Length: 252
Ligand SMILES: [Zn+2]
Ligand SMILES: [Zn+2]
Image 1 (cartoon, rainbow, N blue to C red):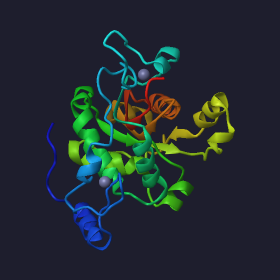
Image 2: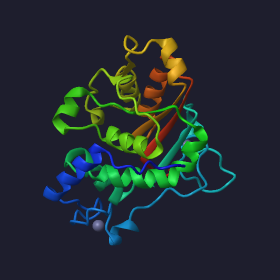
Image 3: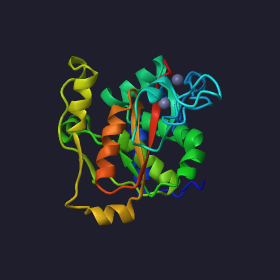
Image 4: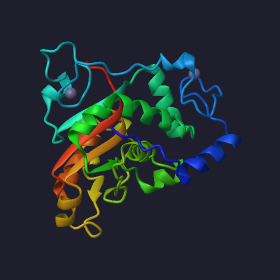
């Protein structure tokens, strides 16, 4: 896969910011050199998802004979396939929480870099037309300043030279605090949270321009969010969706 190495204005701006706010390691939060994405000590602490993979979601499974993880064996997903880079364990949980709640936007650079390295070949085989991040509600975006999934998908878009589209799939409803809902309530709540902007992108245009979508999110747990977004995209005229998550849980 070709990586686009040309320096763009966005990167120059980021460099300027880094001289004022030095880059920190996503693992230990110590200051690291501007050309590093993780410190040497922490590089080995982040666990990668090792093959064999679940044929559906991309989670690690015990052996080559196991085609699906327990979760995918128990329910249908409408996406075609899934890829994930990191195991969602303690250090990753903290680094992801920092990205979402502690303004550690730089963590997205490390996540995207490793995701491109570990999942790049499989993404290339899927051959997406566009990359679309799982959207967050605009009020949440306003308080956080960014959508963490979009930071990652924008960077992947630059590296792979595949366009990112951020205004087709929308989060039109804010979901209730998920902890107070059971699994069924959560699924129903989420299902109604996503829709596509069909005024801006009519169905026939979607099916021509966005036939194959790579949907990007930070964490894959039950797959419900990915599934709801996939259904909204398929309804809008997309032909195939592959889901890419930065981190995924073990097969329990
Ligand atoms: Zn570190
Ligand atoms: Zn699976």
